[in-house]
Length: 72
Image 1 (cartoon, rainbow, N blue to C red):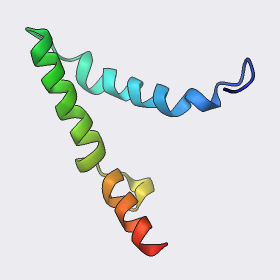
Image 2: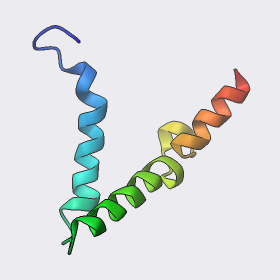
Image 3: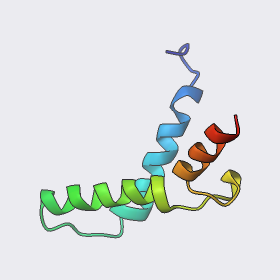
């Protein structure tokens, strides 16, 4: 844990949850908890496997990790 007042260690997760709420949660009405869980699993799969990022040289996070482990 970081010292009190140093929130840099939480920034990655706060960014993820902010995107999750903006892209998935706020725009949808869920009929049941099972539907919510299914949509959440689909979003996490999209976030890790299909989402293209310019910072990652146009690859998804999984593709970038695979590519960088082969290069190193």
